[in-house]
Image 1: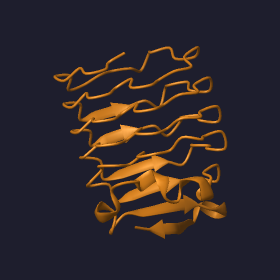
Image 2: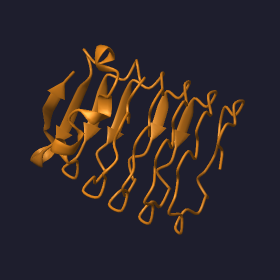
Image 3: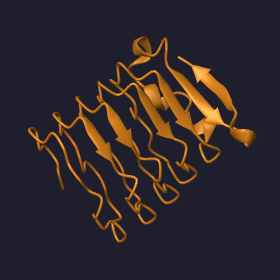
Image 4: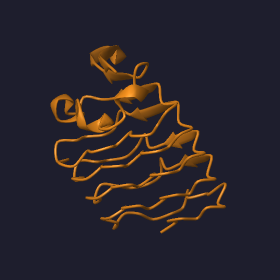
Length: 158
């Protein structure tokens, strides 16, 4: 939809109706000048494909996907790949029980230091494929999982 909008620096999607959307593949792909995006009003309960949704959003510093319902999603490969300016990402609303494609979800996110996930995050599926091909970039990246009482548990550090 906004695929390869190179010069796009801001976008207001507050009244955007996504209730019937099933495919968000490459939706913001290569929006390389976009610095922030607030998608908390997106209704994603019907979405099955989020492959490359923010791929190559190189200037993106703030991304709000805190209300995403990903229970039906099967593909999140390359979803945040090469978002080189992101330092923190809150994926605590993500449910990944249906996901079967996860390659390079965070590949090339060289500044990403903390990723928050919730109880719906399937730890076993994601341990290695998320970072495929970018091991050297992850020496100081933490994935934190919210537990009962709002406490965080470190899942693993790369």
